[in-house]
Image 1 (cartoon, one colour):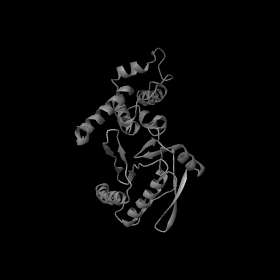
Image 2 (cartoon, helix red, strand yellow; image 1 turned 90 degrees about the vertical axis):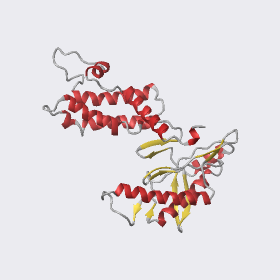
Image 3 (cartoon, helix red, strand yellow; image 1 turned 180 degrees about the vertical axis):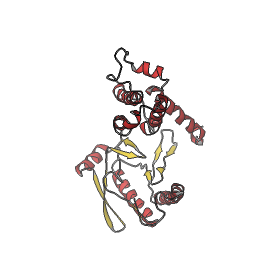
Image 4 (cartoon, rainbow, N blue to C red; image 1 turned 30 degrees about the horizontal axis):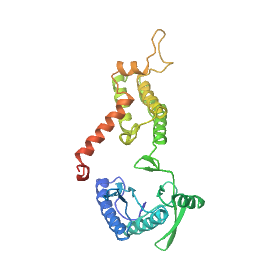
Length: 284
């Protein structure tokens, strides 16, 4: 989005004020969507209806939409028009360019094949009108929401591989000077390494599904690479008669958190947060 009025980024309390302001925008958007009959209601076999709502973090918003397969693209474009109009009311202009505002479509049920084929013939693009302007909405297979890539199939392999590569790259560049300081004690280097792994390195890993062996191995290798960079225990860094350490030995000797436990701890913490903020629907 391009802000045409409001507070400057980085100003005191900017995040808090912006969050409060965005809540008002999102409330107006939800009202407009309901008035237009656009929602994400799923009807179960027993007749119960589950309503899904948007997921947002400030200006990063993901809006679920449901409907017949043959109409889902039209519904999405109609919603994009509503989003543009509502945000424009508050001085915010939606950016529909590549890697900005995009859509993910999953087709199921009657006429799903024909609807999917029609979108493919249009090069996964759909045009719509908003505010007397013509826009193009791109439909993609994956999209980065709040720093995490989300796909149609919920396959997190691409996200895990990308984050694993990022950890190794950061070690070779940003952390190299820190880990090369001779006067810095190893426990301080490991503290720095653990802080990185538990924050940027494994950001939102609690939402990852069960990883297959190949994908998990890449994650395991990346975490151990950070540990070895902090302790200088690479294969070519040992002294003459020093026995090379296996991953298990390194974790045991330096009392590190194994890659498996990193994921387990994150999932347990997420589960605790869900229980603490559990909606009444989960109690029934």
